[in-house]
Length: 72
Image: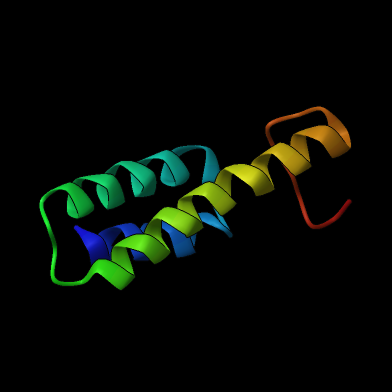
């Protein structure tokens, strides 16, 4: 679960951050509660999940929508 939260948090920075961010946070929390041996990955997944939501919030603040595009 720790590695999955890390991967989902990392991918969530690029696409589908509204879905992947919270999933990464939940998986990281579960991994930490269960006492995973990969504590660093779980913490990184938690941080990236929170960063996903921060990126989403900044895009919403910038243009007022949940979608964004590179084209401008």
